Image (cartoon, rainbow, N blue to C red; front, top):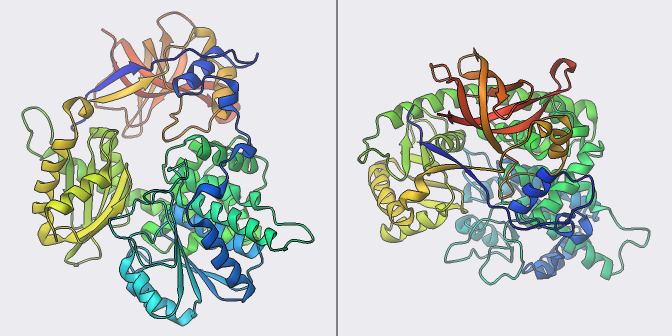
Length: 575
């Protein structure tokens, strides 16, 4: 497998502090390197959440929904088939019911039958439900034809989305999206579920101002566990406002004050709710929800999130867990095939092209995004992965993942502008995008994409770098710091999980399974031996005696050990 060479660099740390006693120097340094230089900047109190006032068209959206509630109109929430869309749909349905709506239902497009978002095919399906208002979640900004079809039937359409808009906006009654041109909302990183949560905040205030809630108003904070899961899963940047949302949601999850479906999913993932982290959401809960939309029908995932009966929630979560197991097998087969395709790509001198565009007509369209993500991480290149939208279809469904420095949707927009008709449709944001195009256009698209990305990325940006938070002393390589780091986040996109580096002597090593490497390491500066593991680290050759390793410090409580281990992300020969 070709892989990008990796350099381990240390983050710059600006002046910081003073911090209260109990905040270790390593954590102070980590915060400062992420722009949090004082305790006040690191304070994650929900009261500091940005108010909804600046988010464009929220008053109009709240007025529309308030009138629908007062008139007992049928509100149909149209979600999306990923985790952000599923949690956003659950937040919308639960929140509208809390705020007095008596006729609320939801529908989610099927990836194969309806395509993405509020499509004409989905609108036709919705006719049987006789909606008065259609509320889109995590989609809609690119659904021109579907919204026109809904409006032609006399339905009101309220779009909530966070994806970047095109040059023309759809003809919806109201659009709420922080990324609309001229929108003054300071945080452009809200996930779809975050936009819906803000809509509910505005609706509650509108109803309160109209004299509702004489006997007490609904507590919308009960939805923050769902907001946290969707925000983490969608890999949006954890700016300060998103960190407030995720932190508040994690507190509810850790206290067991969460939806029964989320509790069941966490248990099936082997996660301790009381110690849950954003990473546990990203690698434990979110994949089980996403699997339904990738392989079957996301309605199953939404039903699990809306279920209030614990036994039934566990049954639904078990089905999701089984589907996720199937997804893992399909994904591994597809990644193996993708690596073979990369091995066959002609080199430009000694380097791969600046973007990888891969296609296999046997791939599953619901899993191509995971393949693109895995290859992007290994190759440090933007990656597009394509599969037929359904078996035998002349249309390809593609998913793209990018690297820092390349706004992937902007790259697609440039290709589309220079080659009208080449791409049928596309959408997304800086780090991820989706598109569809006729299979006959694939080679022309690949050529045009490579030419465009070559103008947008420099050779330096194509060099893979791991940014480290420096070296830990022997005294710091223990449980106290590991426990503080685990709960100190939330860590995630744009607020990277702490990573350290240092030189170690390799006392022992062994292969685990087909791909993993288990190590016993001693810091060169001195100290006790440390257990370490590198997933996917076995390369058919033993490690050298001395390595320079980039690693995370993690708790290791397997079998009651109550120890720590180093999760090695990359190593280089120390010599």
